Length: 399
Image (cartoon, rainbow, N blue to C red):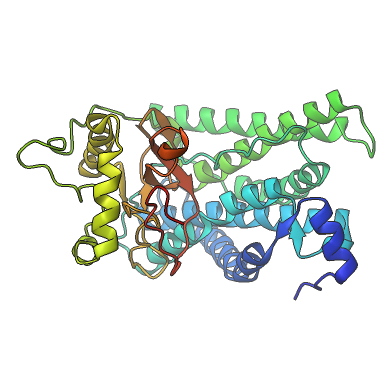
């Protein structure tokens, strides 16, 4: 259990603009299962080696378990290292972190349950089929200028462990190179290995307790490249056939989600989560909120087109309604029009925004800023969404 800061520590944290780390602490506590899973999977890999099998001859479900387990471990490790490195840098503010650290750690932690759940399913069922395009990229880095020094320490600490486990996997990676496909996959995997080792080693050689800002940025660049490469490498060791796959984002026009206001067939609830749509229809405040939303929309065809892109992506299987670890829907955004929370299964472009596998998003459509001279908002909102009892009708001019 993390020691909480005293009144002086809280004052220092507030002075530095730091935010409570309660959610991060919860993710860290839950991570014990991830490390147990990694031990189990590495033992299974060793047993496979003793049985004379290689990565190609393992069952699809066994490969999926290793891949998903590696991703869950890597992301949990990165989140844990970010949190601990910040605490180590200033123990007075333990329990608080800078906003950029919170955002980055949540980006890592937020994807852990999805990968962990899939790994467990793959271990439990020989017929398990992975529903996410792989290899999957690391969640995006949160922009920070300059990169906080504890972040560099976290990446270096994570790299040491990623490298250790990747080396163990490489030692067991004996592939029958009987086909051209396997030879090409083998070559690609070793290219990624060389990139990971080179970037990590160069970042280490540049490291010193105190370095000029330019060198600091150079260390950051190489460390990030190494982390990304090791994240990919572990997936390729687990499922070598995907070494030849490079999923490209789709983004075909989806058409409109329906006719605009004033035309026959217009549905003002088309943006609302289908699972709770009838509930909102019976809510008088929600009726007012939806009516006000469309009355203030300066380009409803564009809004309906954005929803059409989402609907088309669902139909293609590029995205799906986000589920929690228990398989229940995450639900909808708290603000009118209460759009569903989606999870990306394959790389896709929606509303001009490139979305990566396992990212969660919703549509943020709002007229709240219009009375103050602001613009009508219609955009893709990416984040880590958690259940809440908060409801916002987002009616302009109403607090």
